[in-house]
Image 1 (cartoon, rainbow, N blue to C red):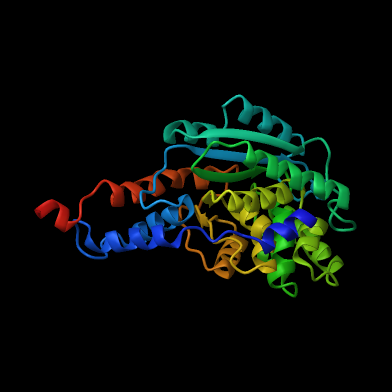
Image 2 (cartoon, helix red, strand yellow):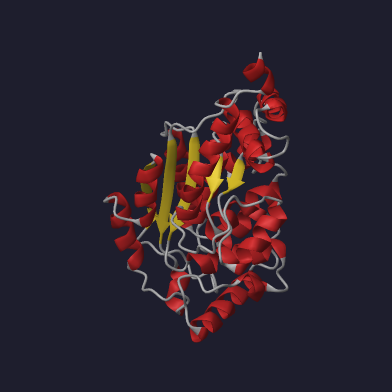
Length: 329
């Protein structure tokens, strides 16, 4: 975990002068003051991390991390574990929902296999990842970001059973006494499946009750793709690359970063609010307002990808519209 800890301790802060320049321009723009307040805030956010008073979305990119989970054997999902591999193939063939969304917004999508066919440990009774495999996943997330040519990053995931892991991470971080409150239906499990899922999350959270290091909690009850996403988001911070987080699994994956180091997710926006009940708990803790709230629960980066046009419009609403002074001079 050396790189994660070092990276958390040395995070860049972005360009506050560019942020403030966009804020100032927003006050003078050719429309009633405050008419697009929330969008103007998004533009200022983009300016800070792109380090320019002319924020833009020209090269959005999606990274989808996929892996299997040992806890899926407990019957916590409506789908069998081999669906993860089938969906990975769909991403790579450009046939998934997020692939279709990406074509509309002009984004690239790369799917990274960090554990398909190699299920993690069953988090009810053992650590999800060994220290060695944890580091392998960290390096995969870092490498994926370092290879990008992008100005906005969408983070997504795929893994049968991963909403169970997400619930375990979130509950262990935020309210270990009430773990079942973080459990939703995920892919659509029936009532019996929900009971099994609640039991699995409760067992996992109880097992790590003595673990107080957020990154160790992630290793113990998270998953390969959750670790890779956390590393990718932190790598993006060091590239000063703004990030759109997807739903429950993604925000649960990066929650340990925020718990470990205040401000670790300042370069991130939450693309949407998932229908999963635990997601609201996580984003409330992070004090972030989702850009979209449409009851989506697909995952795979789809909700965040759907928010890309909104970010792009926020930017052009500042850069392509004159101020009153410019228009009437």
